[in-house]
Image (cartoon, rainbow, N blue to C red; front, side):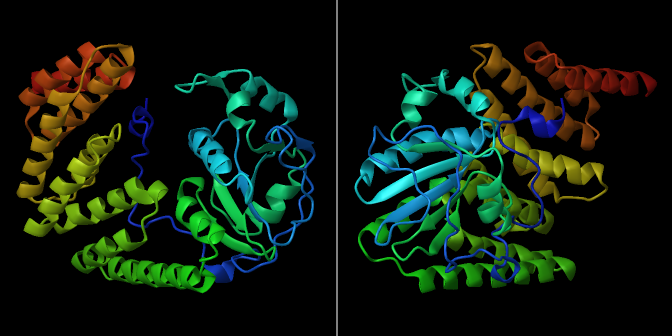
Length: 364
């Protein structure tokens, strides 16, 4: 199992924050007339509350959201979409679109949605769940706006124009303002432009190898963080902080670790960044390495091992600590810790690393 597959979170942070495509690169963008819908299968309609839509009715607000059965974040967003549809029942219609065949959707709808006491079908019945296998709607929206992935939501305002493009978990504030007649499209566009300019400045600093300046600028990204971007933004900031390695960046590392405690694998992912740097020949400061070791050790002590899933997670996180020992040439500590890790999780990657450690120890 590869490191990036061990955790529920992606640990593939880069120096660049994946952000909305520049407006100049899109043929469908905020302010564009929303393309008419030509959806083949309308699976649910809120108990008859929401008609099938081709052209958007003036004066009404719509959310067109793209999802798929295989997309974890899409599935996670379903209860939130249902909650928002119930909240704005008379003002907003939510339309979720997948390009998968109807048979694939039907299979999912019979299954239980974890933790809700409902099936997927019951949960999504309050809004318009649809299937458009020919992909025409996907092309008109996702491809035209150069959206990078799903789930992606498009708010269509009362004038039939696109008012926002973003993650479904970031809909609350815009929809509230829109429902109250307080939405300011120009302010929203200005914020996007400001973020684009900040990202360009960060890129320029990285290209110039002025990592301290890049880190300083990256901290300003907090102003633009949407709920779905929090972890990813913190990973990018952390990667820069590690390369800076001064007192301020060490404190940032500690603070971020505390904020990511509730995210499965979040702290381990931060420490893995340091391990990767060492493997690639870079040298994080001793203070940063010591801080990472303490943060991860404390985190491991708090992890439970009460069932198979938690045991596997604990073993995977302990494996990161073993690598951190190894890149510091502390092979005895690495072996002792990895033996414990394997007792929790005997995945081939972990057992192979233990064999490697023992072989190198024997050759000394």
